[in-house]
Length: 200
Image (cartoon, rainbow, N blue to C red; front, top):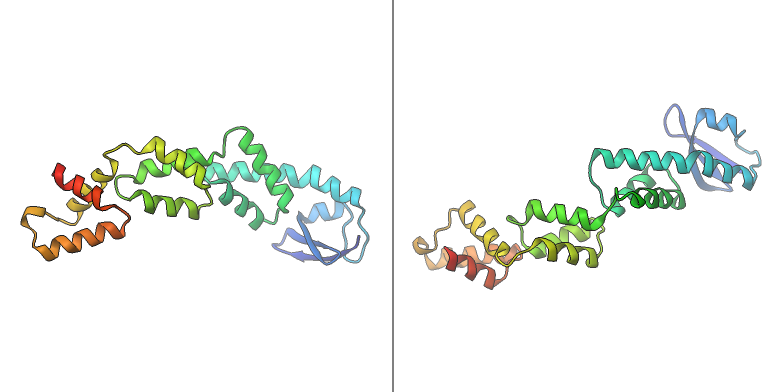
């Protein structure tokens, strides 16, 4: 295996390419320590050593730091680590590590996400947002079951009525149609709207 290129990312960090493929990111001092230079051969044992001694340890610390900043889904964390130049297998090992301590839990993330927004958004809207964050349908469904009571949707519709200053008994037919179209576009069902109006 030949080091085909070392490319500066910052003044101190370098991307290392082996046999024309991106391999990993190392600090300047680490390039010297492992004798990595363009055009020089690198042994598989050296690559394994770098992976074990440097990359995995660093990826675990980076994952912990990212989670300390804010809650993230497994997919979001994986993407962040990859953006940081960690190879796929190293990023996945770091994810496994933080998951083993319960620091990454997609169901818990979804539950918290839903709790904060359930009185403003419909289930369907919430599902779309959570899928966009890389949470599986199974985990979303579990969180939904735990978070949604029977009256949650109609309560959210009532809040939208207040927000839009919609008073059913004072509204014209056109206004009622407009409001109905608005809430249904947000993912609420006809029944949700009817229940909210009954409670009003």
